Image (cartoon, rainbow, N blue to C red):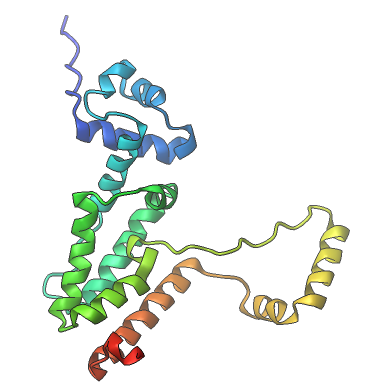
Length: 220
């Protein structure tokens, strides 16, 4: 009778990737050190040899996601390199819907996170951008460099009852006719299109400022 195959050795990478997979399945709020230990098949104390606590676990999960962002095409110019990297970050975030909230909650940047930011800054600098313009371009990108944008206000939930819903929409249209006109004409939002539209708009603007030799000193 053959003996069972040995269980893969537990290490930090295995712990973090198991945590990412579990969060994808059950959501970040349901993830705990205990549930993760059960998923891996170890006692909870075994995890603490690799991550000190839940916050360090979350830091490491962000590193996994950011570290898996695809690299731009070799030899791409600055504009293509930045666009590809940002859209690759978005693709990674779409695979892990909980990640945006965790990224926003981090209080410090790890080496993996800084590597991503370094790559974007280096792409601008390789394209001839000044340090000044690169600085402001990074601020303008904001959370888009991580593949998501912050929605200021969500769309109000509509009542399930048809009459109540019609009444609510009527009141809304009377008070906010321009919003209703826009919503009814466009037929809703395509999040991917809107994300790419904004990135392309920003990149075109950065390019124009670069060609004009813009500096922040012009504000004074």
